[in-house]
Image (cartoon, rainbow, N blue to C red; front, top):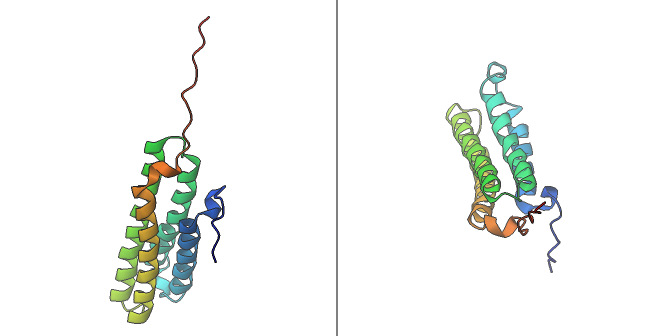
Length: 137
């Protein structure tokens, strides 16, 4: 039986954990890309995959401001989509087997589903506080 643990920071979020796992799978797969891709495809796919979790972490700090929180979540989704593009490119260049590309795409899709759910329900993650009282002098 799985108990729901109170989320106290971004590291507790399942979507963050999944993004981190995806990032590491991308890193491992990209280690075997050709050396001539080091400063292009390898660098690009690693950067975009790392940005997914970074944007989730940053969004957590912006929960007080719904629009900022949502913006950072959509940035995370954008980085995910970029990573999926680079995965497809790596497959088309024969740097990944079909099985490797499929497994990574499925892992990315899981992250995307979680992000999509979080985006759709972003208000429930935000900190709701009454507006500050203005003091008259």
